[in-house]
Image (cartoon, rainbow, N blue to C red):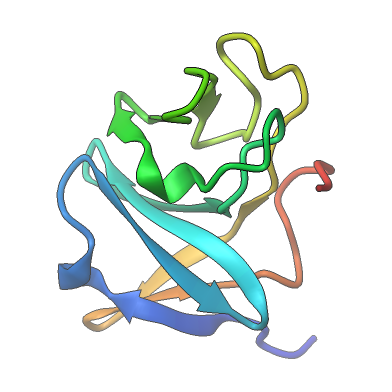
Length: 112
């Protein structure tokens, strides 16, 4: 099995309880740091095709700024309406000072 992780950003680029947009392997990804952990989700709300990277982060959730849908960063599942479909989430690992993301092997079955 080949290593499909790619560099997304420097770990220092992601603020605590914050998010930055990046492109990894042609996929728009929101790299998030919450509760001291890094997460990666498709940078598109499943409800209204809005960039999640423009929303708020807290308690391992990200909120879409337009209609307030919230998603669990660990599962991609919506935790509040109006969204009812999950967003794709991706494996993340740290390599030195870099955040690596594997967009080829999502951790859930969500699709946009």
